[in-house]
Amino acid sequence: MSEAELLPPGRDPTLATAVHRRLREDILSGRLPPGLKLKLRDLAESYGAGASPMREALSKLAAEGLAERLEHRGFRVAAAAPGQLAGLIRARVLAECAALSEAIRRGDAAWEDALVLAEHRLNRVARSLDPGRFTANPEWEAAHRQFHRALLAACGAPPLVAFCERLREEAGRYRALANTVAYPDRDVAAEHAAIARATLARDAPAASALLAQHYERTGAFVGADLGRHTA
Image (cartoon, rainbow, N blue to C red; front, side):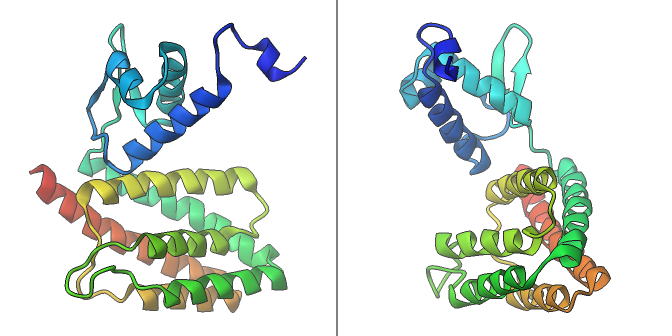
């Protein structure tokens, strides 16, 4: 018997998955701000789904920590207090440095080639769409994600990589809420190059230290900007 045959009548797994994905993207991007009450009727109308797939999507978001279940009162978007950012950055440093050390130990020539290519592609894309003012470039953001994924790809622990990805998305939510896209007096490309060089040299302590500094610098900028927005 298939999974679809085991589902309750009227349950559409494809619709529930699509609604969950769209809600998740809207929370991570900041389009649905922290603390917003997620009213079932309004959401069903906005996302074109019935009550059953919408409840399932919200339950999944609550399990992921992106929504909060209110006792007898539905759901709301999870908080994103500036004070929580430091803990998130620390968790990301601990998890990704462990994964990077394993990737350096286990990685083969194909992994090295993929990392070199990811950095090359990142360097070829402009961070800003507008030379006169900093406007985030989605192509750069995608290449940036791929570079950081390439660093960890050889660690051989898919659950750890998935955890790192979840932390990355949560950190990205804070960045979106703070609207931080530029970092004065900081050369992000040079930071990426230094991380890549140490990684390819198989120097795990140096690569881990550089990756930690990279995230801590970003966290400091985002935290300061978020504090100004929420003050």
